[in-house]
Structure formats: structure tokens, C-alpha cells
Amino acid sequence: MDDLPLDQVRTLLAVVDEGTFDAAAAALHVTPSAVSQRVKALEQRTGRVLLLRTRPVRPTESGEVLVRLARQVARLERDAYAELGLGSGGEPTRVSVAVNADSLATWFLGALTGVPGEPRLSFELRREDESHTAALLREGTVMAAVTSSPEAVPGCSVRLLGRMRYLPAANPEFAARYLAGPLEEALPRAPVVTFDRRDDFQDAFVRRLTRGRTGASTSRHLIPTSEGFAEAVAAGLGWGMVPETQAEPLLRAGRLIVFAPDRPADAPLYWQQWKLDSPALAAVAESVAATAATALRS
Image 1 (cartoon, helix red, strand yellow):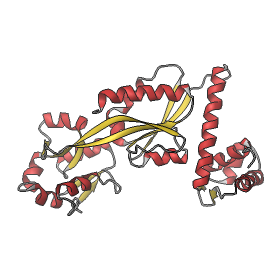
Image 2 (cartoon, rainbow, N blue to C red; image 1 turned 180 degrees about the vertical axis):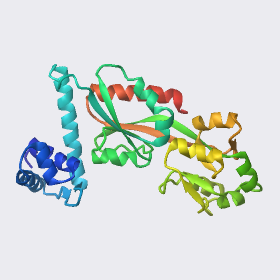
Image 3 (cartoon, rainbow, N blue to C red; image 1 turned 90 degrees about the horizontal axis):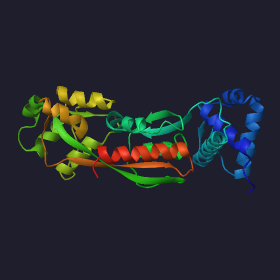
Image 4 (cartoon, helix red, strand yellow; image 1 turned 45 degrees about the horizontal axis):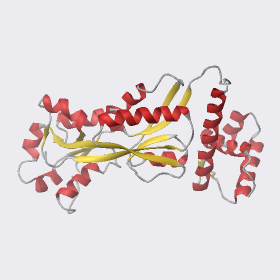
């Protein structure tokens, strides 16, 4: 296969980002026919279907590889222009990162404020469950991610940041009402707080406690923010696995108790990023690692 024409690769990226061929044509200042021809030529050159013609358009698995390539090439071009003093009017460099809600609510913003002032950066954060952030890297949507996966996404490097500790916690009155008696019997029946429908953390805790016999109760409240989750548990809506950092002030205030102090759960977190010689990405990675070293357990 010959070298991939960059105009065709950039056009593929524009279609994915804009969602339709017509919108991509407007963004690229060409006709929709030209966009269609470039995408078809790229598909013929690679021998792969690269786009699903849905609304919005979505890349296939092969298309994701080329979308990621297009974003990486664009990143390298911007870095090269900046080093040559040919940047676009002093605009900051955009860095896109996927991060889980609990990290975002506790330690991650501190890492961003620790990034040096030069080069100037602007951050685009995508909040996603840590077990799904790697998918955004794979799709080429973000340049880096805080993830629970130790397996490097193709084209990415991975490093362990540390472990976030979660405490099985409940409001004291809730615990007295629902958690009296053996935990393995009471907990599967007690109302529970979960982050969303994909959140399996509380169920996994109960399965460990009951040796796989059952998960958490079907009586559950879905609270899709980290701060709201901790507050819901403290208010007595249900029990939940609360990040240690968020639980500590609520424990001191008497609004929470840890009902199984010998059973904390540690979730390992990893930093994955594109393998690029990018000063902007390197600066973010170093600050994230330094902050995580103090905020997370080793």
C-alpha cells in the first residue's frame, strides 16, 4: 500500500468530528462530493470500510486507527509550528483528556493547576468511567486518559499512577436500620447508591462479601456525579463505596460511618497517552504523575 494521503486522512477526521459529509465539507471549504470522493479513495487505498454511514457518522474499528493518526499528525504539526514561532496568534495548545468522575472531583484538577505556564495550554476534559476511558483513547477522541486498564491502547504508553481507596460507608441511622446483623445477609437487601447503570463497584463489593452468591440490592439510586454520590450516601438514601478523600470530612462530621472497616476497596488507576514527542503532553503527564503520587495510595 502506498503512503496515506494526508488530505484524505484529514477529511476522514473532519467527517467524524462534524458528524456528516455536508458539515465536513463546510468545515473544509470544499464540496460534499469532494469529501465523499476523498473518503471513498481512502477506503479503496486501505481496502477497509472506514465509516458507518449513520447519523452522526461513526468510524469503524479500522476508521478509528486512521482518526487517531489524523489527530496525532495534527498535534505534531501544532507543536512544530510553535517551536518555529509560527503558532496561530498565541492561542494556547489544546490538550484533551478522559478522566473518571471521582478523580476529577478529588485530585485531578490539582494536577492541571501544577502544569507549567509554558507552553500555554487549554484543557478539554471528557468525564467517563475509568473502565471506559481507554475506549476514548482507542477512538482517537482524546490524547490521554486516566484509566483502570493496565493494557496499553495501541500507539499509547501506560504508567501506574496509584490506587484510589474506597470505603464501604453509610449514614449512621441508615446503618442502624438496614445493616444490623450479619453483613452478608443484610447488605444484599439494603438500598444502595450507584453512579449510573454501568457502575458495578457496589455489586462487586457484595459479591466478594457473599462469595459470589449475590450482588447489591435492586433497590438502588443512580446519582451520576461524584459529589452528589457522596452526599446521597451521607443523606441516608443508601450505602455506597465512597472515595476515602471525600469520606473523611463526612466521617469527622458524624454523617457517615464505615460499616466494614476491614474491607476497603482499592482501585488502581493508570495514565495512558499517545506516544508522541509533544512538549504539551509531556508537561501534563509529569504533573499528573507528581500529583497522583501524593493523592493516591502506592
